[in-house]
Length: 274
Image 1: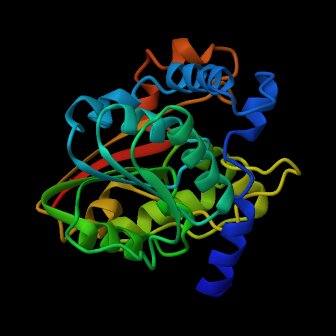
Image 2: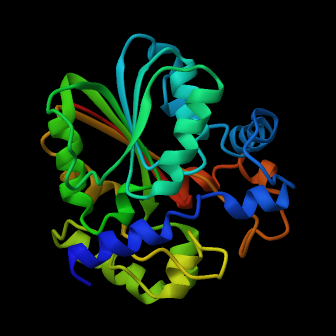
C-alpha cells in the first residue's frame, strides 16, 4: 500500500477505540466518569510497568504531546498530572473520547485530528512526546520518530512503545522470518521486520470483526537505537507477556514477576532524549 492508503486505512481502523473489546468484557456501555474509571483501573493494573517509563509526577507545567490516544486512559492521567496537554490521533473516535474526558473532568488541554507523519504543530515545542503503541502502525516508523524529534525542545524526551521483533510470539508465529532478521542484523541490517499477514497483525491489534491493523512493524532494540540516532541518548527495555503458548499454564501476574518479559517480551519501551 502507498503511504496515503495506509493512513486512510488507519483512520478507518482506529476510529473504533483501541480497547473496545476490553470495555465490552468489562461491561462498559457508556463513557461516564464511573465507567471510564473502571476501564482505567483495569488498564493500569494490567500494565503496571507504565509508571516506570512515563514520569507522570514530572509533567506538571510541561508541554506534553501524546500520539495515539486509544481509550484515553493515559491521556487523562497526563492531563491530571498538570501537563499542558495536547493529544494527536489519526482517527476521530479517539480524539472525541479524549476531548470528552477532558471536558467532563474539567481538565485543560485538547486532542486534535492528524498524523505524526504530517503534524500540524510547531516544531521545538514539547518537553515530552508520549507514544504508547502507535508509531509502529504509521507505515514509516523511522520518519515518525524523526518527526517526534523535530517537535521536541532540546533536552525533551520521546517516550514510546513499539512491538519487539524478537518476542516469544514472533518466534512462535514466524520463526524462520525472525531468525532471518537476526542474521541480517548481525551483518549490519537496521530496520523493521515487514508488515506481516493479517493473522500476525491481528495477534496484536484486532478490530471487533477480527481484522488486523492495516500496518504493523516490529523492530529490535538495536535497530530502534539506530532509528533514534539524532537523539543525544537512548535507552530501551523489553516488557509485557501474555498467558499464551508457551506460557499458557502460568497466570500473567505471575509471569510478570519472572525474567521472561525482559528477555522475550512483546514490547520495547524506549526513552530518547533530544
